[in-house]
Length: 149
Image (cartoon, rainbow, N blue to C red; front, side, top):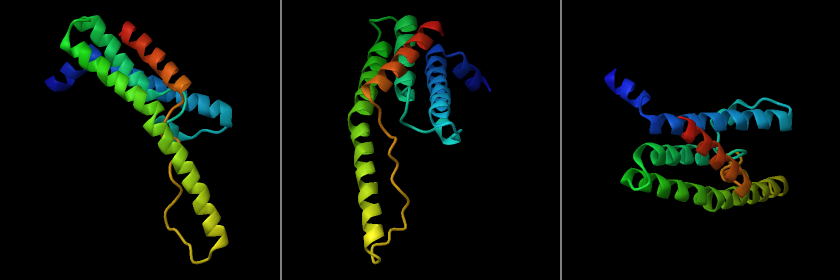
């Protein structure tokens, strides 16, 4: 029980989790408004606006800056981690989503035109990465939360 209390009183951890949770909630609301349907998978899914990964790590970095100081090793690690995560979300993960979309189209064409081409797998997940704007808004959200917490 003391570990749970310690974790809940850890401001860096709390800022990161609140950043992630609020981004996921906003992402679900935005998706609901745009598509006019509720998708519960958006509450935990990756991709979309705003980036919850960016909100998570920027909330962590800003709270580390605030409570540990800009010269602390904790802030340095959090800052580097945030940079890597946000860069990866816009780069590798975004390209993975584009490739998944293309592979899904190819699979659909082959399945429709060749009876012997039967794939038991379901379509690949397309929403895995983020646009720079999605990352920016996730980052700003996390920074605000990190500053407040």
